[in-house]
Length: 211
Image (tube, rainbow, N blue to C red; front, side):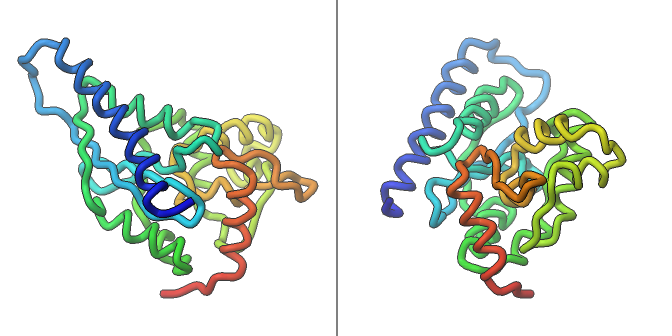
């Protein structure tokens, strides 16, 4: 897939969601008690296909992931939901908060570029957020099982719930759900597709850590 095709496919998904949001907002009353929250989105050139990120006004990641037909459609669904929020304005921005540049550097081999990126905790239940925080403690180049994560958050019997929370992670790569594998070493599922999960794990083992 060429970079032009990648950008076109990703832009189409996001722009469609944005137009839908605009139509919906026109049906609301013109007066509003408070200014709309702005959510900034951008597209990142990825060797794995179309990748989109969304940031809040404080430069924190709200969502990130692939949007093509090789995925399970979760990121595309998140974009539609974010773009149609009545209390938010969905705006295209170049490199919001430096997030796009950091992700591009990661894909190019600078693995440390994403290690400390700020993420929003506006989504998910308290349990899901505890799982997502635990994911960020997995060292780059390593993997953990669902049981490992369950024990790390003090819920050793909640392995299935951890798996579900892992699958609901809205911020791919930066919150590294791809580093969680089955107890038998199998890659199991991944919202972006197992082929991408395999690539990411290999990339993190063989690319140099910088910084």
